[in-house]
Length: 505
Image 1 (cartoon, rainbow, N blue to C red):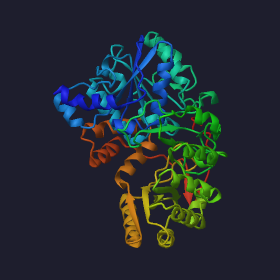
Image 2: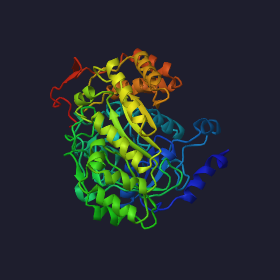
Image 3: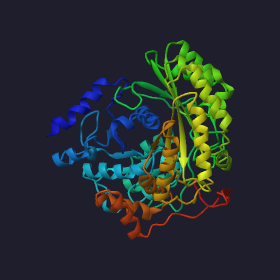
Image 4: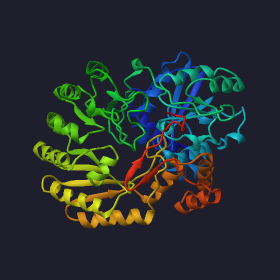
């Protein structure tokens, strides 16, 4: 049974461009707790892969959550790396990049397949060091503490080299030294959570190391022309108060790093269209005959820079995507988002003029203070937009995150979220498609996002009980997990107390 399971691994390896191989004394299994096609679309994962190989005597091999998890379990094949197809349990360190809360179940699956105890307290020095980092550490990594030997907080381009050096030390000395270093939390030794770390600007931009057709962003070279954000959206972890706000990279530097053969280029960041020279950068890429994608199109910037829409159309894009976020201008102002209906209509006109086949708007439902009148305002706006261009909504329940001004805002009951989505669908029928994410799993995400170590332990119990929604509800109830109430929302307006009580920022 081993060969059929590993055949897709070998096929994917054969189709990759840019994979790194190196003999080194320190071997790290770089793990992503979602399948390959998701993990290889992660710019941070690819960046850390390259940084490990840049270290003097360290090398990384990649491991992912198997596509067919049940088949791996039934065959009793241990979790293996892609590069050598060797069991990850034989590596000195498993370094997990965790993007968001629900991937904690993938962490459990991977450790279980590897034959490694999931709980930190059940492991000893015979087992690999389990390290967790990634985007989740910017908001609330606390639920990871029962499972990780070390948690890396923040931007890890430099922290990964500190970790590689420490891996040459005896385990006790390693823990002691890292517990004293900025950006590292060692659950057994660290007294309080340190702040997230900011990488030096000369480490930017993050960029792809490997191109592969087997991802969500097929054979697209990803690069980060800016990091962070200059805006103050109250729901967002990557707002202007995080790690010094937005830091830009000169277009000349970006262009120098794009491989000659990369025909598809993705510009990735929290606020790419806020880059002061983004039009110049996109124009050059399009003039070179490349298809260009941008991860964060802001409606106000598209209105101010209509050439950007034309350039995206010229490069081959067929769907224009931006965010409405709140259903009404009243809600958007409360979020400090400030996107207006006029701007969204203007973007729809630009999409039509550019020949785009569809405009897609991201929307949050269940925001504090949201009422049916807000949804009605959205329906009226959607009717106007749909006369200009086909329209769809990516609709997600609002999940309050730690380290934001909306920390502690309640989750709207699941049945009420479902009612609001159904209301929108009925009002938008024939005008716009509504594609919602699951309110049930958004609630699970919320409980983890607002939780402490007991939320992580409840997650383990839910996973052991089969991972159904009912199992998650029961585990949270039995453990007495309650979301924080560190913030309050009244009368549809946010009350913003100091963030000083939460130490990560």
